[in-house]
Amino acid sequence: MDARLRFDHLERLATPTGLYEHARGVVPRVEHGMCVDDVARALLVAARTPEPDGGLVALTDIFLAFLADAQAPQGLMHNRRTAGGDWVDVPSADDHWGRALWAWGTAVRRSSSTAVVAGARHAAHVAMAARSVHPRATAYAALGAVQILAAAPDDTRAFALLRDARVALRADPPGPGARWHFGRLTYANAVLPEAMIAIGDALGDADLLRDGLALLEWLVDEQTTGRHLSVVPAGGRGPGDARPGFDQQPIEVACLAEAATTAWSATGVDDWLGVLAMCVGWFEGDNDGALPMRDATTGGCYDGLLRGSVNTNQGAESTLAWLATQQLGLAGVRAVR
Image (tube, rainbow, N blue to C red):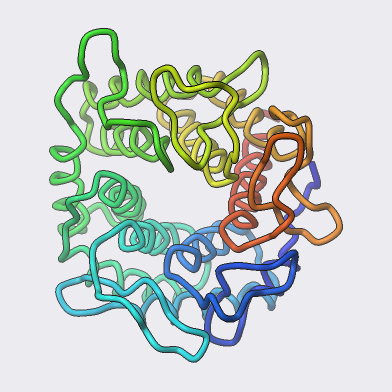
């Protein structure tokens, strides 16, 4: 694993006002525009980067401005914007809202720029007036609120959001013989137990922390074959589905890496660093196809692991999934040295 993050492909996808969502190969697909989902992921990675260079500092300001522009009354947010700067959707509290809160909270806690911290905290306060009916959106938002509380323990809005998220994510027990109580395994599955772990740790809720750890352990086992990850494909996974499934998405691996890191931070159990190492290994070729998923020549990441090949497009989501996983992997290596 390269000992530094490469932002050259991210810079290729970026513009003075945002970040293109899709690429054909490495060339941005301008016609598909931009979205809050990806810009939030980009701000998260940028805010977690120690000693950013001038180029990344400039990108951080762009990402922060993009997310602020997406905000609407009552804390709701637009998601989709054209290359020309027009928002084309109705503001909501869907997943992009939660991801933005996660990014803002991370910036509040991790950014070395007082201006970025102030801007992120203001935007997070606006967003925390809203609530979502969607479990994953709620989970992402809770991760952001945890970060804010770590930086500012007296933040009442962050505490209120966590209190509500604790209730929303403490779902009814699953049926006999089942462990997963959120329906079919679909996308970004690991963020749900991760939020349970983070909330339980932040609020001193030992039961929720225990349940989140148990659920994450089950999810890791469900997505491991031998000694490598075999993650849920884009079409999801249910009982009886053939395995391995394709097309596997880098974002699923990044979600597991984030959750394993949160579990390690909450418990100090080094087994979670082993899970993080498997996530890094998936990108390096330790996967069902034995194919590298990150492109060493561009700094980007392929959009999907197919049966016997890869999707060679290198969009923002996939590239940021690799950057985030590599970032966490490097931090994990430093932690155990």
